[in-house]
Image 1 (spheres, rainbow, N blue to C red):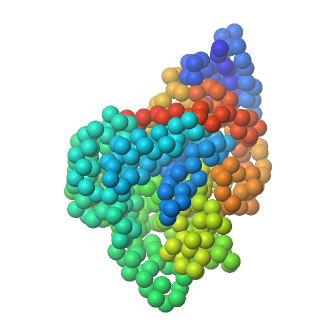
Image 2: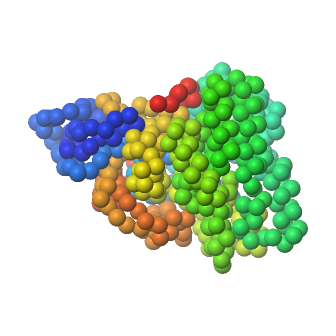
Image 3: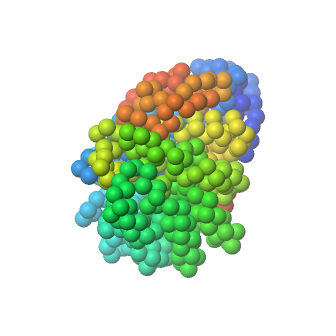
Length: 464
Ligand SMILES: [Zn+2]
């Protein structure tokens, strides 16, 4: 059986052209014209764009928090309808286990047989021990090419000190493991949070007061210095402010392999959202915190010029009523994070492409190709080319609608993008050649997603 997608305008990270795509056994086998005689099925995609399936390198499905979890892999249907066919999920280290066993357990218990899209994993260091250093050489063969360390969250076993970060970077380099960091100064946040609490400043908006841009900027610049000393690549996740983006750019221009990601919410929402009344502000509590409008402009510039290379959702499926309310009387107890896997590509198209802030090619690079490269999945994922997996999105640029939790498959009671205009949508989505979304509706099956193991040395990517 072979499928022909006909008449669309193909968009890749570097090209845009009219051609038909022939799919066999889940792979793209030819791109060209006049292939009707080779096809058993034909999909007419005239007037639409054909994008690579999105790669969301920043999700937290089934993340344990305070005795509860974020929504699990059964809600990855939300990724599919948003045009994302591969997620790279953060598998937290389980107490008493190393990263390899933790990833295997997360896959076995949470993802396997449930995921609607293909998936890969990062390790997250939650409890530093010698064992974590000892297993670094084994990470690549176990499909873990990326590991995240936290410079924030003082008082937890997962905040690492500078020496630990330096040692980890130094050891990881030789094995092609890309170290990702959550860059905020945990000591300063601790002092600022306690000052807010002492002053009775407990509403959600004080989350941003206790995590100002400087705590992120300082930690990001420090991470750049530590990576330079270790002569190792470094990747900063969820960059939210101008100064942090500038620190990564400076390190890159000085010759470091220094890269970063921002998220749709940092490009479209502001600190004012945190001040919404009746605890609505809790919906916007994520770390780093949302910023003022001038930071948004700087971040758009950073993504369009290639100073930040990736847009990931940082999807956390917390419910507002049952989970965010844990911090009803104290913002420090509000679970950090917001849902976003469904709307990532819609936000980037509507507020990036349609406004002229980024090109279609840049959107594909940020949302599909660059994350595939950094996570060792390129060119299997994130690209339309012969030999790549047939993960494809027929994108209808004429669609008009509104983003709303009521239409979301994220399984929670809110979206931070509630009521925002939406232009364009994933009309059809193919996962390895199988039609998974039709007319914006999920028609695939849970469990169709497979574990795709990333290769090491993803940060050897120099960008376009
Ligand atoms: Zn995250």
